[in-house]
Structures are given as C-alpha cells and as structure tokens.
Image (cartoon, rainbow, N blue to C red; front, side, top):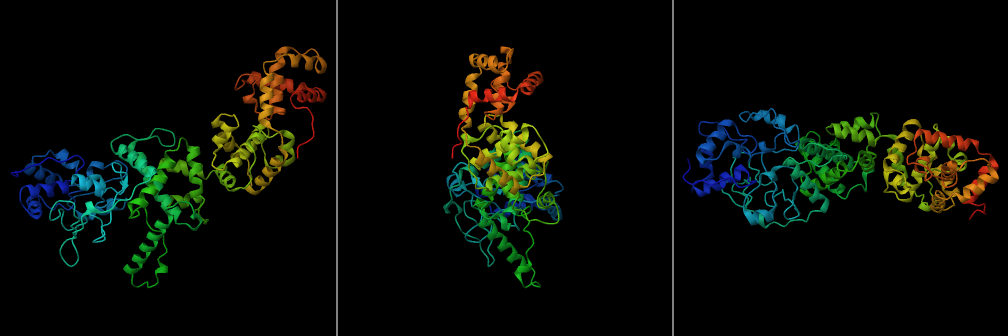
Length: 558
C-alpha cells in the first residue's frame, strides 16, 4: 500500500486522482502506472472500463473500494443511453471497435472548464462525455481543443497518466516534450440559456431523474438516447441546401463538414479531387468538435423533445424535416438511414410527416393575415359552400372548423393547431384532432387551400366576437324568445330556448355546437338530437326573423 493516500474527490476522474496520488508519494506517474500494471496486464482502458484485476490492484495500493474506483471511470455512465460498453474486453484492444461504432465516445481525451480548473485543480470525469458541453456552475461552454497542440485535452493514447498532475495540457508533442498550455488560463464563452437548461436536464438524467418527453414520462436512459438520436438527425438536416436560415450554428457545421472531407481526401491520395469526397459526414460516430456547436445542436433537439405534447414537437420539427432532399426513397427512410430511430423518434418523425403537418408548414409560409375578431369557430355554411366545399370529401362542421383554424394560424405563423383552437374558444386538443382528422380523410393541395382561405377571408367582414357576445347575452333571457315564438312559431315551449340560442350560435355567430352557451358543454347525444329536430323544423321566415334579432340586415362594409 502506498505510504500516502488520498480519497477520490466527488466527480474526479481516476487518471487525475492517480496523478495527484503519485505526486503525494513523490514518485513519477510512470512508476505508479508500472506498479499497477505489474502482473495484472495493460491499463489502456483505465479511464473507460478497467479490468477487475486492475481495479483490485489499485484498491490494494490505495485503500479505495472497487465501487468507488469504477465510479471514477466512464463505466459509471454505462447503460445511461449515451455510454454503452457492451462487448468491451479491457484486455483486447480490438473490442473497442464495437463500442466506438455506437458513436460519441472517446478512449482518451477530455474537455474542461478553465474556471473550474482554476478554482479546484481537478479534472472531472463528466468532461469526458461529448454530451457534456456546458459548465452549469459558471454558465460557460467547455473548452475542448488545446490552442497549443491542437488536440483534445488529456489525449495521450500511449500512456494512461500524464507526467504530472495540474491544470496544464501536457499532451505529448511530435518533436518531443509536452504541451505546456495552462488550461485554467484559457478564456471561456458564455453559454446560451437554452444550452444551460439542456445541460442541467442532462446532468439530472445522469443521476436518475428524467424530464417529460413529448408530455409523457420517460426513463433517464431513453431521454438521453432520444436527445442524441435527434441531434444526429438534425446535424444531417442542417447541412442540406434547403436548411439555410434554420439554425445560427449551421455555418459552423458546414465548415466542419468541409474540413472533414478535406481530411478524408488527404487520407486517400489516390483521389486527388476533394470534391469526390461528398458523402455524408458520419455525425453518429463523431460529433462536432466544438462544444458550443455541439451544445446548440443538442439544445435544439432537447427543446423539441421536451415540448408539452407530440403535436407541438412535430410542428417544431417540420421545418427541419422539410429540408431533407427529395429522393426516390421515402422521406422516413431517408431520416432512418441517418440516425438511430428510437421508439420516441419514430413516433415524432411519423407525426411530423403527417399531411396536416405539411399544411402547417404551408400556413407558416403564407402572407395572408386576417384580424382575429373576424374569424368564427366554424366558417359559415354559405361562405364555405361558395369557396371551399369542393376541397373536402367530409361534411358537417369539421371542415368548416378546420378552415377557421387555418385562418387563426394565418394571424400568427407561430401558432400550433392547439393554440389556434384555444384562441377561438375551443378546447386545445380539439384543434389538433380536427387537423389530424381532415388530413387523414382528404387530400388537400396547399395551393388550392391557400386560394380558398384568401377568398373566405375576403368574405368575413363581420365582427364575430361581437356576435358571440350578443348570443351569450341572450342565453338567459326569455323575453325575446317569447316574442319571436309567438309571432313566428306559435306553440313553441320555453324549453326550446337553448335550441334557439344554439341555432343563433351556429348559424349567426359561426360557433360550434359543442361550445354553444345554450346547453351543456359539450352537449350529449340527446341534446344534439333535440337540437337537430328544432333546426329542421324552422321555416325560412322563422329562421330569418330569428337571425335578425342578433344580426339585423345591413349593408356590407367595404
């Protein structure tokens, strides 16, 4: 056992701890490495997954428990969704290929927070994870590439320990010696709020606390894997020509794509033209080298996955998926070929590719604008028949309500179907369900739909909010009903007042039956049947007189 011993610090990597331990015992780090290796084999995977013999030897000479020693290696994160060490034999270097093929993992190297190094002087284990990009303590991006040697910090593949502990890089240099850059003195870049929030969710997931994904509960491993898979997909999509303007970090990804292709051309001198190396960059294996770029891509994926529901997430992803090239293969197949399609990501992509999401994209791109006060809950039947009935195979109020939702989304291009329903005074889920139902039963051409919506908007000149308010005010007043019924519908009982209010709500104010102030919300089947009987029994003169109570005839406003 070493004469001087020290406990592992919280979050400290095993290599950094052993380097400090060698200094405390006034011995070179190489001598300590040799002491560990003697009779137990190589320690090449010391920081990843040391063999049981290596862990036992380190425990004997340091007095540390094997569980604590393994928690200071990447084995601590094995099975969390971002680290998968299945098949790795620490005694066989060739088995590393199985792990590396799963992507986003390094056998050596680390990022760092210079400010943490300056304050504490230890290298943290979590900095080795490519998915760790931000120091939440200091609100800055991690630094990963050394300005002196040009490599990741702690990238010394031929020896597990550096010559000495501390805050300097100490990577071996080609001409001999070691890089003397003091990492703790390097400048840092403030991270965006979205990147900091994503990192906090990532850290909580590593500790067993997963956020809601698409509005439902998830496991930490599933959440971390979903973020990784969607990030990989978005890195491929952002390099497409149609993705211009999608993300502020797009140029950084394009620059790295060009650098990787040039490096590939240098590795294949038989192909002198770098333009021949135009295949897709394998982002699933090697993420962007810049922690800031990597962080912003992961934050974009995280924001979509943590949307309150699948509908909102699909709406947010649609502009990304629309950037995928048109090929002979299916759009879903193109997406699946570029990432790992987890269960969540499959659901999300299928929802994004649904027809009503394509309509959403077209609505966002349209220049049509209409004042909200003129939009009813459902387009009045005469206007619908004149301008849009030929577009739909379904009848009833569903297509008329769908068109009203489209107009509401025209008012504000950032709205979702649920948001549009909420603005029109309809339950949020009803909006998403209506759009989904219409797209599943009708084949809508977006250009024809846009022409119909413009024609409808030109015919909606009344203040629908004012009409709705008038009808609501009549729901509890029987005087007007007695006067109308005695003149135009003798013998009608006062129990028919709710039906008359519902008729005004639907035919004059343009509301839905389910939101009528004349009865229970939503009405049951018996109430709907009674209303339909009342509606069918109205003569044209009685209907005209009833409508004139709320909306007397007047010249059309210009």
